[in-house]
Image (tube, rainbow, N blue to C red):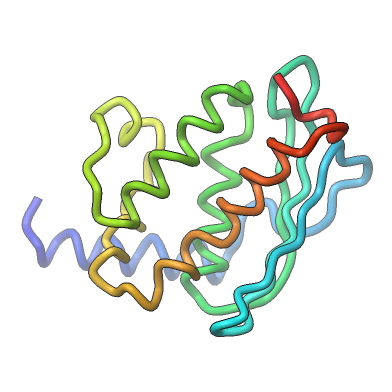
Length: 151
């Protein structure tokens, strides 16, 4: 895909998810929650998850921040709902690699879907933390003992 088309697709996806976030709000009975703040810019994200039998049944986020942090959180929810915890952890790692400028395998890129487009943020190091905030929160939720999120 040409650079101009990729940039246009990036803008379209980011703006759409920032203006019309998916799964934004609170979950009634989450099995785990995590709130993180990016002290560099003030972005705040709270991720809530419902995990049953090793499967992510629901994910929501709430908070405030820049367009990239909000869009990335929205994209994350659409990617991870319905995945098993093991796959979710794999995709969180793949996303982290991607926004750091590292290559990921084709299968992970396909599973990330539109979220893989956020990988172009690697060209703007000051925005990496914005894109990663919700994904870090989700990783912490899945790693916390007693959250009901262990596989």
